[in-house]
Picture 1: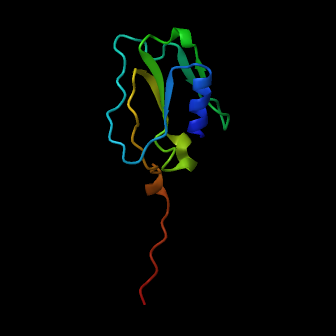
Picture 2: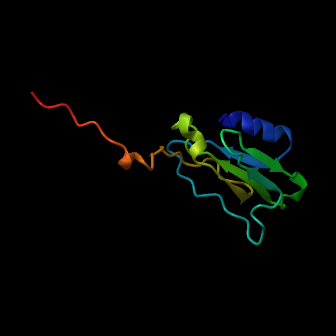
Picture 3: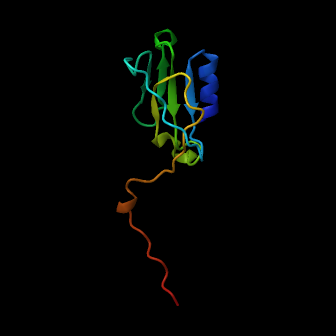
Length: 122
């Protein structure tokens, strides 16, 4: 996922949004959720079956005042091949944090996969 291009596209359309790619070493609190606001007001992410790309739909005039959409891809920088595996999105109070921490992908099925024993010592 090209997080820089996504941010450019959102900015070009005048959508109050922040894309977080996951910064190694970032130590910031999570985005603050607005109080008494529908967390899906004015936006939606629709996941499609198969390998079809997700679709972000935004109605900028319906976004509550003082909020912006956050799209957080914590694996985008640390594990680009798996960046699509983790995604968080929602409304946050403006201004949002300057960065969000990155993560490493851990295969949840790794313990079920066979492992090769180490070579015998000679």
